[in-house]
Length: 213
Image (tube, rainbow, N blue to C red; front, top):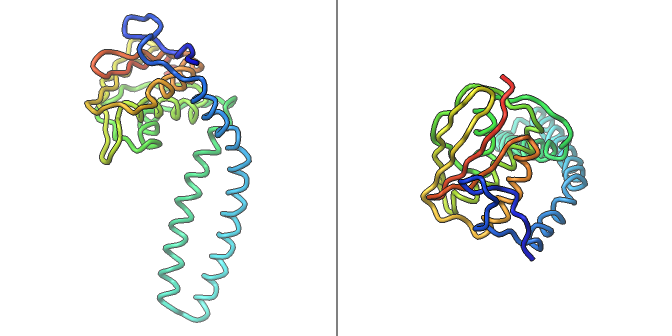
């Protein structure tokens, strides 16, 4: 079964090209329903690892083993990265909390979350929304049009008219097979932030967002 894809085409009409499978979206929702408890479980494990590393560091101070010091520092660096990833995921569950973020920071965060380099400048201005969720939504759309492989990137052409910004993302890569579902989810999140997602010609995505500064 296919559903209303939640975004428009370049002419402002409901998109008929990128169908989204209800079954695929329900699979995503089922996985997402586990996120909050999963984050809690992982946080507990990371805390235990942190305490263990502190004990190992104290042991090093007593025995002075340089190999032990290097191994501990490597483990601590990895633990710090894991904690940062967990913090980003935990922020996604606070969907009712609005905050402000610079538009350019929002776009960079969206690209960073999916490992896609954003090429182009973004105008000044702030967005007020559930920022982590909005970044995730925009990231889903960027991820889909950037295709697969390494060193992925999309170009952005951004403009501002009054209190509204338009971001046009373009890629020469072949989009992923989950393009319809990704755009459906992205369109839902962007609409929730009083914005609009349109799929354009030549593999372009148009994102409009309201600005507060």
